[in-house]
Length: 390
Image (cartoon, rainbow, N blue to C red; front, side, top):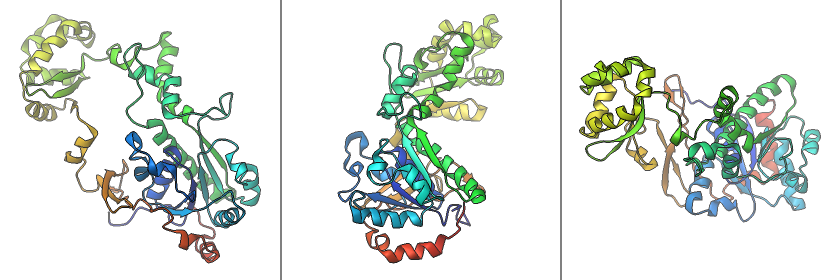
């Protein structure tokens, strides 16, 4: 990209959050050019120490940020934090309701003391009967029916990603962007609240609307009523798993010709989409037999040529060798505190035909203490961003 895309340059974000949702929001804003200062407890964000499935959480969602250590509960810490907020545009937090008040940062007080500040709070639930409940990504997936729709009947299964935390962070970033635009007109900040439950609710809305229209619950995805004649995973000659989707009349014509399925093309029961759906019980086993006679790579070439949707079933780590992911700008590198390099996908959009070159080190705990924990840094920042907008 010839010109760096940093529309939020000049915007300062203070982040006091942990785990995924709040840090994801800060990460998205940092990728768009904001200066994001992560304020960690003196001992550091506990997410830094997670192992198992949580191993990637801190390094992934804290890229491009700065880190300071501060005891906000102490009198001195509160004074320093207050100095930071005076010259900041956004405060991100994801603690339980009431936690900010214990830090001396009650939302109503923040509005009075820092009228231009945008408070972005990531919570389990929005206002309502569940507002005070504790939530996790898995909790809301079970509650909303996402887990029900993901696993087979009777075996609810969470989605294989922290999807609600990540998307909740994204919705937080979207709300912050909108509020920054409004603040340019009004000069006044807002209090934003993002709900993990409501984020998940949006993901199951298609199934809610289905139930509302049809009067019955849709079946879980593994047992769903098919909408298309071929929309399945098959095994190739070399024992690879290949998903194939045939969703248009043109694709049906092409795949019959490409795989030499003359009998299918002529069969009286396969002349319409409705007929092909009804014929799935006997048609799919025969189609699977044809697929099993092909090498996976040959089918990929053939399907790409004729425009039939397909996908080899892979693992996330396979993406490091995928030619599309490996293209320029597809992966970005970040340096861990121990010097090791890790790779992650770039933002999923292009600006003027180019991927946005996001990167940045994962901050060493307290690496920016000297820069931000002095009175002089606050005075410098006041001059630098006075009147800054989006």
